[in-house]
Amino acid sequence: MRIDPKTTIAGLPALQMRLALKRLCFYGQWDASQLEAAAGVAAGTGESVARALVDAGLAHGVGTRLWAITQAGKRVSSATAAQRVTRATAEKALREFMERVDDVNRRKEFLGKVVAAVLFGSMLSPEVERLSDVDVAVEIAPKLTDGSRLREANERRVQLLASLGHRFADLLRDAVPLVLRDVRLPEGR
Image (cartoon, rainbow, N blue to C red; front, side, top):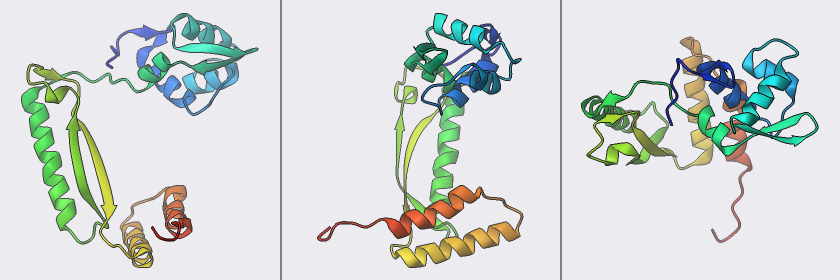
């Protein structure tokens, strides 16, 4: 889905509302103050913005002064505002992506390898000349099959990159070893 960045949604600039809906998607339901924070609007305006979202079909009431995002609202939250590109530009981007896949798979410092890349979406329709994006699903698997060696290699890589100035969210860095360590397959599998 594409939205025009020059328009408004529920009385607010489209890009501002798209971001607000994206933020609100993390809540099962939300109230006026959460909407105000997500949309960056003045305190006390949340209920009127929520009513405008309901009128637009992007939210629905789920209780007294509580709302939730509709499927249409979720589509808007992930919509693009980018200009469409020519097929030639999209094909060039796809070639560059596949070169990067080959590079990642060849280089030892990358601990994962791309085992499948699947093109889908409008690029598969040759009659479509102007595309909004290039849709690719990627499956990544670890290059090392031994879990303890993979964890050690991952920690070394994190330390190297941190020494070069890269920063990582602790949640992601710390969660990966926990997931690898705590997963137990039933016997016989």
